[in-house]
Image: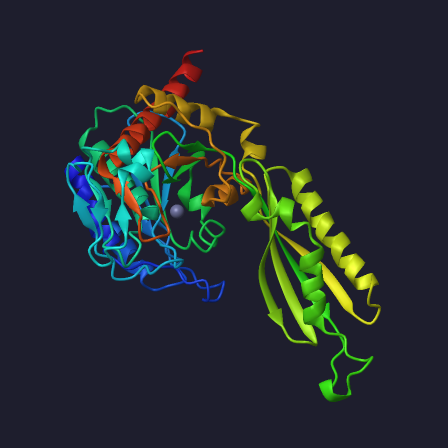
Length: 417
Ligand SMILES: [Zn+2]
């Protein structure tokens, strides 16, 4: 299994699949290159005998591992796209077999070094087979580790029909990194009662809490006039934008001053002219009251600045993005409880850390399909020092296999009762 996982990861990482946030919203996948990996996975699933294989026009690849037991249909998801936050094309994966603990110098840029003393998690992986990129690109283990885990699981379950489980649906999705993949996933075609994304980090991570997220757009309109004749007439929208930023209590509520369960208000774009400016914020909190409070504060500051200059116009528009999946999962914790049980059966203590971000599962859970996030082992994702241990990925395969069996046991217990 180790060899298969390594080969799959290396093969998939070498295929360029960055998504493209500049593509129109209606274009899914956002980049044509994602089809290359989707089509490869489709043919590999066909070869290994998976059933009900379907690749939709929007690049959702689904397949079934038929079950021997009546049980709720469990879907397992991974995304094929990679981020563009760092160079993501021409990836040349390197395998460091039975890593001896010495610093790993990445050849394309020798200033890129992975050292055990910088990371207890890396130190723990001495003796493992590690996969990195070459120093000048990211690796793309986010989420090709998840893809390789699911493909290896597929072969494992298909070649071991004696393992008792219900139908397992695999689903490979596009455009997660730009937040567009989950919204259009055809849930009827997927036909699952519960789902899990394989998109988490270190072994043990089990996430059912994500941020709740809004976007706030502040439109500022001043008064434009020839600057040579502007005395007492010009109202500069850029100065007003600066005043809004300056008035916000940065010290307490920005990403760089918060962590853990704290939320924030983050100014992430300013564009415009003296006449008109647009200031965009992302707003994040684990609780709706907190989210509301951040938005209220922003409105108050904008109102104060607007009141100081009656000739300007300032409008604040708040747009909902996604919600903490905990709100829905709390109503039925079985998807989380069974995942935790699967971890324990593999000798792994579940770590319920909250995720300061969103996952495809945030959107799917809100759409009615409960979807917690499981670990894949990937580390330092979205950057040149990204790496993953193949042995950690193997733990994830074991967890998924146990999880499929647990859902079949739940159905049997319900019938026996
Ligand atoms: Zn991911």
